[in-house]
Image (tube, rainbow, N blue to C red; front, side, top):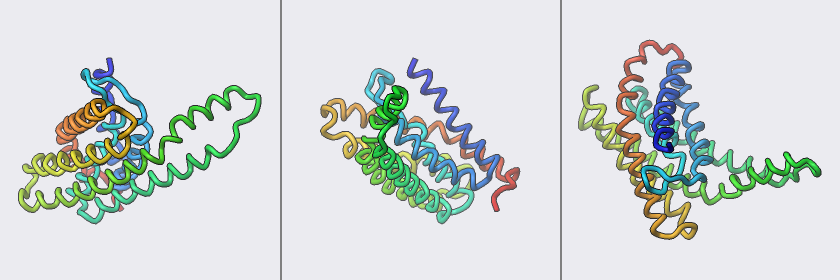
Length: 232
C-alpha cells in the first residue's frame, strides 16, 4: 500500500507545483519552495518501508524544489533560481526557531488534549535542530550545485528539445550530493550502518525516480508560460 500512496503523492506534488505557477506566476514558484522545504523537514522524521527497503518520507516534496529551481532557471534565469534557494534556506531556519520556542510553553494543566498535542509537537520538533542542520547543509550545497549545473548544461545543450537532458543531468548529481550529506549528518549514530545505508540508497533512488518523472512537468510549465499573467 505504501507504494500506491507514494505514486499518488508524486503526482499530487507535481500538479500542485504547476497549479501554483498557473495561478500565481513566478510568485507561485517562490511560494512552493518554502512549502517544500518545511513539509519535507517534518515528513522526514517518519521512517517507512517502501519497495522492501527502509526509507523516510519527505523525498518527493523535497525533490520538487529541484523541479522549481529548474523551471526558474529555464524561464527566468540564474538570479531568480538562486533567490528561491535562499528563500527555502530562510524558511527552514524560521520554522525551526519558532517551533522550538513554542516548546518552552507549558501546556494547559488538566487538559489531556493539550498535553497530547504538546507531546506530539515535542516528539517531532525537538528532533529538528539536527535534522535542520543536515537539511541546511545538504540543501545549500545541492541546490546551488543544481542551479550552477543547469546553466552549465544549458550552455552546452541549448534548445527546448534538450531540456530533459540538462534537467536530469543537473538534478541527479545534485540529489546524490543532497542524499549523501543529509543521511549521514541527520541519522549517523541513530541507526545501524546497514539501515543507514538502506536509507541513503532508497532516498537517492526515490529522488532519482522523481527527477525522471518531473521532466514532463518542466515542459508543461514552459508551455503555459504565455498564459501566466502574474509574473510582475
